[in-house]
Image (cartoon, rainbow over all chains, first blue to last red):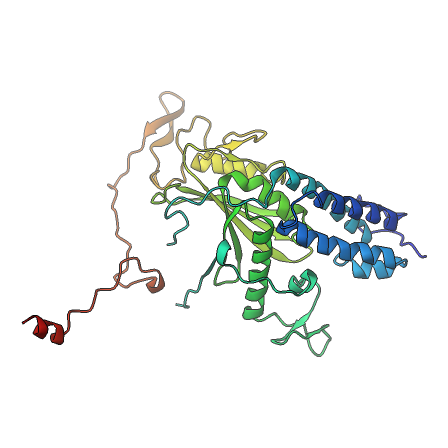
Length: 113
Length: 268
């Protein structure tokens, strides 16, 4: 398996074990998201997306092919993305966005012109 | 003048979400593609360069994307709209600035990591006169989005410096120019006005020439601040045009048709 020499991005080192890291991150995201109610829109879409990516990670041993499947960006960027998605999922469990709207705008607020 | 067309989608009456997988519904525009009116996609070549997507296709994509965000965050989003120039706007409650901006920054399908602009708009006729506007850019997807909230002179709004550190000076500018206070801002102080300046210049009730003028006084040998004296008294022009500007946004109802002759004959 040819690992690349550099990512081309300053401060982002080439990852030695991308499969392992991505697998752990995606599984943790799925675990966090499963604590949300099943009807939550975020849970449905995130589960669909992450399961797709997780299956790509599990079935593709070749790094170049995996990069193609996890577009856009490189594997190292995909790892950073997964980390931020995980922190987002944890925050959303606290903020509970699936509940109904907090407050309607006052009368005539969004009128234009 | 081009015909203005603005479509409003209230969250409760949004389009039914299609069953296509998400990745195809949100086609990353950065990947060079050749869009036609059919859904066929070809890589650009030297003979056939990449063609800009038609406005209907772009609008439809934006509508679906706005629908996706509204389904993920129904607690925070009051309205989603797409302007006639195909720009997506989210109208949110003022308490939900941080959750929405964090979602837009961190989600796989959004990735709006770049804060382009943070401003306020003063519309004194509205109940909450200041409208705070955030513009974001997603570099991987080459997509822009606008987030709008509202507040008045006394209500504070959360600062997004923890989400986007670049918002620091923008929020200072909004505080200085409009008087909107940002909670948990690391350093909220004036940025453009003079050190002892009183007032918020960009508000609509602040006059163009200001209240004080500053000049160097030879006798006192220093800068002095005097109430402003204009050589000519202020002339107010009514810049309205006699022609109706926005016929689609008329507020007064049409004049009702007069009673017909047959009904008047029956009364007789």
